[in-house]
Amino acid sequence: MSGEPEGSLGRHPGVVAIPGLPADFQAFHQLYRGAYVRWAELYLGSRHDAEEAVDHAFEQLCVQWPLVLRQPVAEAYAWKVVKHRTIDFARARGRRPVLVDFAAFETHTLHTAIDPIGALEDSLALYQAIRALPERQRDVVVLRYSLDYSTAETARTLGITEAGVRSTARYARRRLRQELGLLEEGDDDARLEG
Image (tube, rainbow, N blue to C red; front, side, top):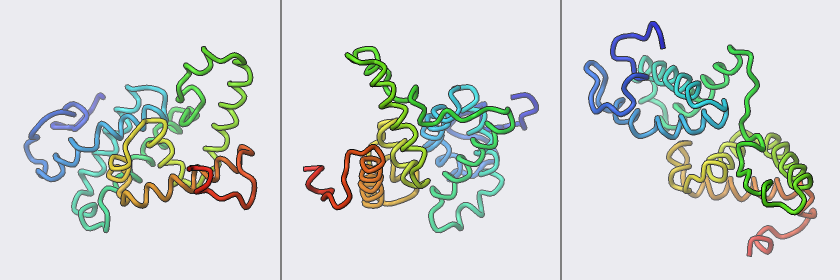
């Protein structure tokens, strides 16, 4: 990035210490930057753009660090900043997000499918159903199933409890099954998972 301030975080993603930055901020940066970049890359479709968007988010978080620490859950606040910065990045460049696009999912299925057109139609239906989920459910689905995060990693990234991740994922799966016609009204979710 041109015009980056001295000691900018974008140039030092794995650095142990950056003079002048709080140690707790640096630890937070090291712990979450990788997860944020993976999510932003899925959203933007470009590793370079993802790194730039996330670095801008971390610059904002650094400036607001005392405010971030006063939040009930700093991780949840930071997640929102990263999401908004990534969305703003896409808009500023006149690009549509590719998040949860069927290309973001495993394409192996399309290559090995007996009916590739049918598989593509199923992927597009799933894509539309995921886009229609409430924001928290969509976040959990993308982190858990697109990026293959564990329940603990998803909880830590979103700043929610592991029980919250499991519950949100359960509701999201149920809603997706309903949307895709795989669940009739009144079907028992526990029976379907068992």
